[in-house]
Image 1 (cartoon, rainbow, N blue to C red):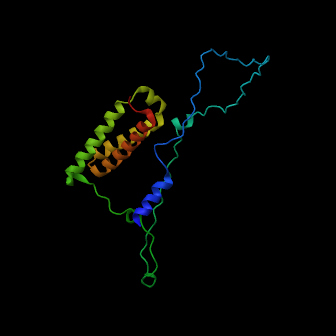
Image 2: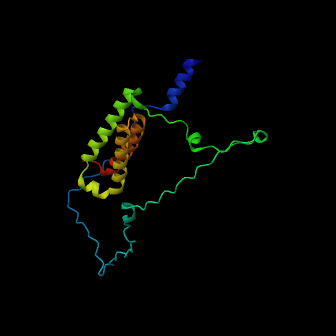
Image 3: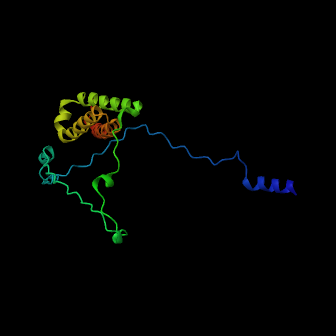
Length: 185
């Protein structure tokens, strides 16, 4: 049965060595002249449309931002409550709302070293910026310098963690500035 099926399959597919012949066309030996289409007498001339662009924006206000005056914070006065009103909540003082602040001090020499390195790298990168970038990105560089100076002041006062935080903010702004194509080339 298997032999019959194999034979039938071969018989239905036909012979593989007999293929139809494609007729060969005769070679063209005489040159054939090429025809050029005639050019129109008057070709239409296209006019470029006139586009009115809006004026170029100027960031003069960003170069010298207005600073609002700080208003003095009014501290809540806490008076001791009478014994019968002890269940009523007391308003929080500023110190209680912020929490206890620590000086950070010399407790962590690794944090001091990291802060010192961050501050130094920001100073080095700021000094390496091209003057053209400094002129174009004046407000951004001013913010970076502000964070750098605050970080130095915090480090000098013994607050290594605060200095590290401020220096990191300055570093991130400087990274963004360089990603925008304003970095040293």
